[in-house]
Length: 375
Image 1 (cartoon, one colour):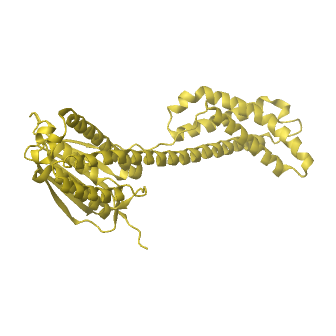
Image 2 (cartoon, rainbow, N blue to C red):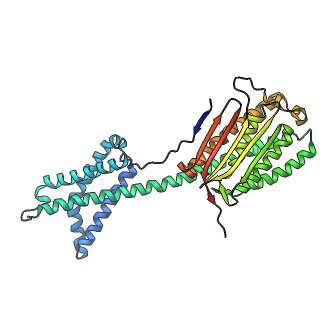
Image 3 (cartoon, rainbow, N blue to C red):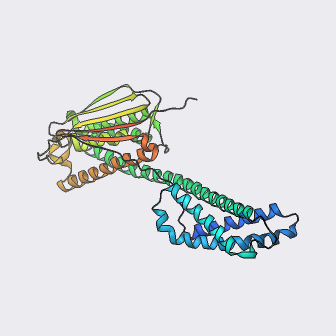
């Protein structure tokens, strides 16, 4: 039975600020006092009235603000369990209840004798508390989104930086496999590798032309074919590839590397890697399929899968084992890297699916069809 799994999309959900965080508390205090100063400036007729109005506003604002911060600190575990919109309603309700309670129990301090329109004050203070809460929550939500984008960009840069040394290591190993037995071919391979790295180490971009990724992958396959000979065959089915398509860099090459190291190399007779690239509506489809060792069989050791013409005897057994182990470990890291980059760049619009049967392994990626900008 085939096993299939798809990339799980983890979207960053909205969340209330952490009211137990000192920075959040200080920002709330500064913002509320700043709004109070703005209200005093709008109500004052002259500069001398600003200080008096600020004292009147602070007389009601300070107990409300300190009580709200204390209750929100205590209620933080409960707020963490609420969805965002319910948390917003809870915070607003708390602010309104505190405001009206302090206004009511404040007695003559907040509603002096002779002031008959108490209902107007109740409505006004309730609306002001909701307005201030909404302003603060909108600010914290905006700040969270800005920080999330910065963290997204930083994480993507880390993923790019991680895949390049792994790519360098495995490509050099492909050349080392033939450098002593076939020096002329190794010299040609080094020239190809220089061209390969000129493209691979270019300026980091989120997306690159698909034709560039295909060219890079073909150069990589050519290097591996020097090492493995006729055991490695590739069937390119790319007739339906749009010429202006863009994809994340180093997306196809690690899939081919996985097919070579885990699929073709352990098989004494080798095999053929099938690569299908094409457009399906507003999506790009990328599929890489390779044969694999039969389930339940004992796979040959990797050094036994290398032919003598590939110069495998140039390495002691311990060095060969270490080289292959590091290559395979790094390759698994590269495939995890692909999943994470698709998640970060396209979120739920991309799909990464793996199917493994008794004698085959297939990776299929669907991602949005992004067009190259024309000048």
